[in-house]
Structures are given as structure tokens and as C-alpha cells.
Image 1 (cartoon, helix red, strand yellow):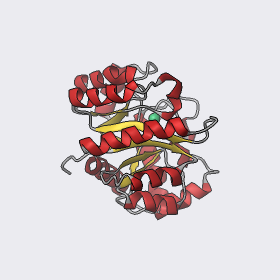
Image 2 (image 1 turned 120 degrees about the horizontal axis):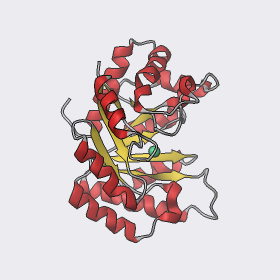
Image 3 (image 1 turned 120 degrees about the vertical axis):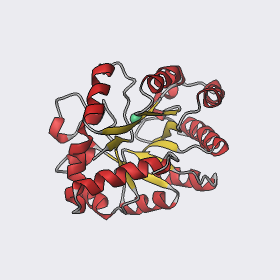
Length: 255
Ligand SMILES: [Zn+2]
């Protein structure tokens, strides 16, 4: 049964890409979505798509974590890159209120800019959001953004999950749910509709409990899926199938 990883940073230097992509192919991977985090990485991410076109989908964007690296010109650089490269999605972008800042105004500026581009080019969003789900959902509805996308590394409430799903998003589920202590998350995962999630690793970040001291790679997806299957009381194949179909639907691919 094929599987996908809806969020991984395989362009980072951490990986032996040739060896990893060979393993991904031989272990049933059918797609990985690789989001760029800064304008200077747009080329690097796109070249992975050129090298492994059958597996790689890309998002181009400006991550809230790297505010000090961005400048406002990067939004026009992003628009140029959209026209030149035709990415599959916009991101990684979003709001992160865990980051300390006198105000979050700058984060809003970059997020709104990317939301506008996603609307204009009819592309899904790859969203990073911590401690700002209400604010982010409000931005999406104020912009009347209908394309949807992925809320990556989602660990919010069931209520926040269903609001996002109504807005056309799916929730990215990853390593965090493999920890025993993540009880609230376990409940949320069990209650999600079948068309409301995808599986992801956020490699090389967020290592799952079963591989805490190893390098995190998309090869961990089938094991994360086992946890999700147990929580949802569904067969493993069902979970892999829904994750894969939801991934393709959001990216506008034929299922
Ligand atoms: Zn990420």
C-alpha cells in the first residue's frame, strides 16, 4: 500500500538525498511535499522536484520562524517564483505566537501576503501555526480563501480541527501523536473525519517516540500510520489510503 508524507524538509543538508530517495521508492512512498522556508531556498527545493519528479511536490513560501531573514521584497520574489516554477502549493507560511516578539504585526504582513498570492494563483497553502489557530482561521475567512491546504503538525482541539476542515484544509498528523502523554491529541485524532487528515513527519524535525534518537525521515510514515490506525480503530491500509487521497485532493491531483 502506497503512502505519502505531506510535510518534510528533504532539501536540508541533513540528508543523503540519493540514498534516501532510493529507499523511499523501494518502501512504497508515492509522494512527499517539500516546503521551502525562505526565498533563498526556492531554487534548492525546485531542483529536488526536477531530480525526483515522480515523488516530489513543492511549496514555496516564507516561514514565520525566519522573519529576520525575510524582507518585503521576498513577497514579490515569491510571486516571480510562482510564475517561473509553478509550485504545487504556497508555504511554509503561517503564524507562530510561541515566538517572542513585541507584536506579531510582521508575521501578519507576511502571512496575508502569501494568502493573497495563494488566492490569486489558486494554490493550496502549507500552514505552520502555533498558539494562533483562532487568529489564523479568522485571516482565512476574512480573505474568503477557499482553496484550502495543509495545517501542518496540527495538535489543536477537535473544534479547531473541524473549523479548518470546513475551510477546506486537512490536518497534518505526525510524530507528536506517538508520545504516550499526548492524550488530548489522541482524542482529536480519533474523532477526525476520514477526509480531514494527512500523515507527515516534518523531517528532520519532530522525531517520533519510536525513533527519538535517530534521524527523522519520511520512512517513519508507515509506523506513524500504525498509531493513527490504533487510535481510530481502523485498518492500517484505510489510514494510508485516506492520507494519500486527501493529499492528492488538496494538491488538485486525480485520485
Ligand atoms: Zn516545516
